[in-house]
Length: 111
Image (cartoon, one colour):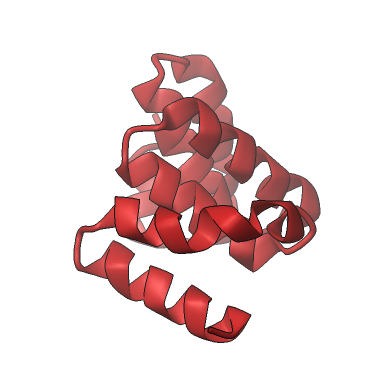
């Protein structure tokens, strides 16, 4: 299976609520994905939805380092930090996400 097909299938598994199956496809490529923001974001989302929050945080922090203006990556990292009870750190990312993108889901978390 080609990498593009793996990504698309992993995305489909996430959309249908099966993050563990998405991880089964993505984890063998984890080293290659370290320098690919889109792949890291997909990996971070899969970890988040499978409640592997430390791994999700690590992947999403890499995305933010590679693409600091990616509002969704900031939002996802904020949600991950929030679930880890790191609320002050989460707020920073929520504020940046809301400043970058006016979507209501980003703005409602800024308080």
